[in-house]
Structure formats: structure tokens, C-alpha cells
Length: 222
Image (cartoon, rainbow, N blue to C red; front, top):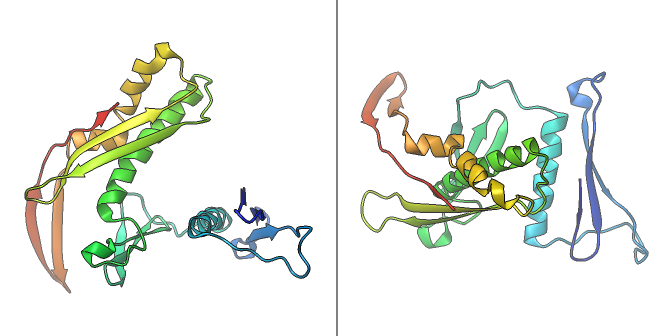
């Protein structure tokens, strides 16, 4: 997995792992080759966006080298980090959420609402990619764009969500079929037929339950 920075430095992120070795001996390898202009040890200058991309590549390889703990599916744990930032753990994967500076946060990560929209868009992209694979079509250029608007009244919620799937390799006669497939991705189905939601507030062994809330949503895919 390679990336090239704006300063022309090529970074190769790989892993060194073997099924015959203990997991503790797995390693993530970061290789930045010497360039003709290097007079000493190679150095690396990254933009903020490049740093985030590199972090993503490192995390991807780290997960492959040393899989996370065996946590059962269907569980998410959230703990505070600092201010409005929270750490989200899902089967050993770690995400972060925060709030914009305009809302009192430090804008170090997406908001929970943005992560929710991202889950719909990425689920749609997953279904689109699998459809292209099944029909021998290229994923090159495949993108999903999600546009959403927050409600102006209470309760706070997403009022509208529209997604656009761009699949350059898709023949015209398969547009309707792909639309039907991505319109029924798992996350979209969950919005259309909302699950039972219960919140338990506990203090030590005490617990209090908020009554179930059930609402239905709709996602438009274009």
C-alpha cells in the first residue's frame, strides 16, 4: 500500500507477519526510500490530509498484523477522551467522534451524526461494489456522495438525506438494477424499518430504563 506526498516522497506501508510466528512478532513496515536530493537520512513532510491518510494505512496494516480482541458482534463501547471527544470501540477497531469548534468541541473527528451519514453512504458503496464485482464490472471511479440537512425544529435529527452513486463502468441498461440493490443496503433497511431502541441508565447495580423509541426514516438514492 503506497502513497506519495506533495513533496514527492513515496511511502510504502506493508506488514511482516507469518502464520508460523506468534502474533506478538508481527510488524508493520514503513518504508520511505531515499531520494536523489537526500543528503542525510530520509525525512518526510506531510500535509494534515496526508498525515490522516498515512495514519489510516498504518491502522489498516496494524489490524492485519495483530487482530483485535475477540469481541462478540453486536456490541459497541464508547468512552470519553477529552472535552466532547469520545473513543468508539467496535470489535477491536477504534474510532473517534467530536464536535465542531462552533459547538464547543475541538473538531478532531467527525460528529456522531456525520458518522451516521457515513455509515449509510459506506454501506451503499459496499453494496454497489459487490454488484459491480458480481457482473464483472470495474470499481474504478466508484464514488458515493451523501448530502444531508438537519431539521430546523425539535427534536434534533437529520431531516433529509440524499445519496448519489457514481459508477463509470456501469452500462446504461443496469442503472435501474444497481439503484434497486443499493436502495436496500442493510443500513438503509434499518432506517426504513427502525429497530427497537432502549436506553438503560445505570449507577453501579442500579438501573433505570427509558421507554422504547421507535421511528421510521426514509433514504432517497439518486
